[in-house]
Image 1 (cartoon, rainbow, N blue to C red):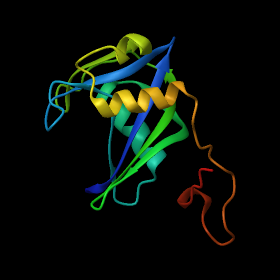
Image 2 (image 1 turned 60 degrees about the horizontal axis):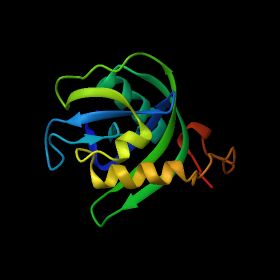
Image 3 (image 1 turned 120 degrees about the vertical axis):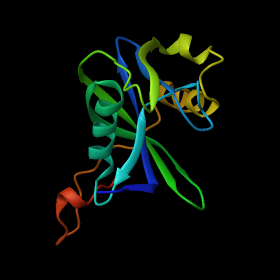
Length: 150
């Protein structure tokens, strides 16, 4: 399946008060630290895409938790979630990023090589603002094809 360049996800993975970050290897954020994520493939749900992207980019196994932010533009949307660390040590994929590491959240916020957007997302995470996945699903819709965060 092809990437859907209009739908993307990123996740905040925290282990021992340290956040998982990757050093972007391309684009406007090249050389800067960001939270991991990527594009959904056709027909893929956001949580599945996020867990796949984190594993592919960092070698970390994680499970999607809560939606904490969403950005809309005229051309696309980007959803940001908290993600539960399960296992693994960060390893760069050597392609999309040149480094994968855990950094203390407070220290990360002071760095000059962290993108402004990543700083705002981490500040929101610290403030505990979030939407939680509801178990609601309308009648007649397959629950794996429907997610409502409220």
